[in-house]
Length: 406
Ligand code: CTP
Image (cartoon, rainbow, N blue to C red; front, side, top):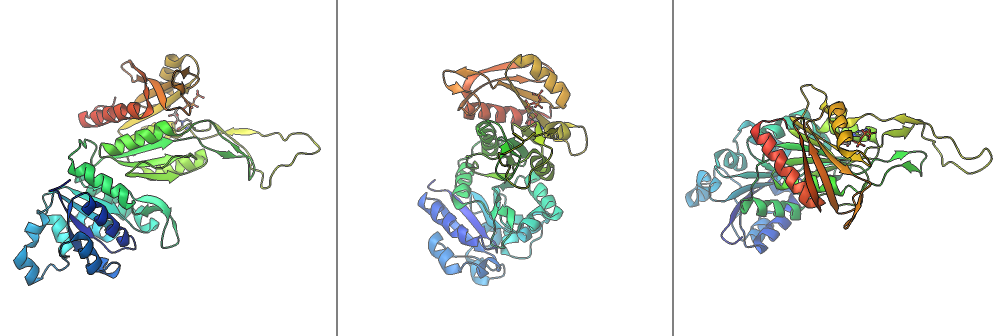
């Protein structure tokens, strides 16, 4: 990473302190960092600490004669291999999306001819506001690379997506961008569901299944590696969110459906989750006790079919909709029936009853699949779930690039 240069714009938000750690990681890797601190950013971190860590002068003022004499703002905007905005506030995103240029940071973003990466950070309501989501789509369409945001507890006391990605995740994304890895999905948004769902019976018991989430998480990570902005809607798993992926944690099928609908629009959607087909029709408010009368009767009702709902034609249908088929018998025939019934473009079918040299497919690290579309079927031999994910992400990138459906 020696000789690589990053122009780092630090916006105004509580997350600005994490930008200092990002600078440290970049400097440690030999990347030169030239910092720009917005006026709001300077309320959260001092120019002194930013400059000391970056080992360079901090620029803040568009109209500084001294700084302009040394390096004009146009030259500054082009002096780096990559422009990184962390934290990217709602305001900075709005300015960049609309071409406003009223301070050094926004002018730099408008004047640069270099790739731009943003790590958004803001209150959850601000992030979910249609205006911010519109700006996000515009920026992604302009080729701006997005890292995060993460979901979690926020300084404002609320919980949800909007927390800035961790410095390590931003660092990894910066390194990948500087290394010039293939990013054919840059500017695209992919929705992935993963893991099981858990349907409550009473406050302590749930109806769930053996899905580990490994295949879905690997697919989310592989899509992010190719440059996509990825929303991973996940049931309960023991896995960490892959770098650069926004995870939305849910429990029930109905929560998963609502989170998927909120995540639209998307260019591609991959439904890997093992969604519980049924849920108890009533959730007992207190723990069911053994006792007279014998075991309780639990009546099940059908859950919404998330995949079928999103695959149905309409203006919000992603261009490419991929379903999974978990089968224990008649794999290809059942998968082909599912392709038609669900209305998706591809079905990835796996035999979840199979046990091979590498162990069981469900919960294990390997998979063996059939990829079906309207035209035919391909058999992908047994391989690691990460390798299957990588190949699938490449196929998705090729399909979106070619404008084909399947
Ligand atoms: N799926 C979904 N919502 C549901 C059930 C399934 O989105 N309520 C999705 C899964 O994520 C997967 C696909 O539909 O992509 C097929 O799931 P699978 O469990 O194999 O099929 P089922 O719909 O349960 O059909 P069947 O009962 O015939 O196996």
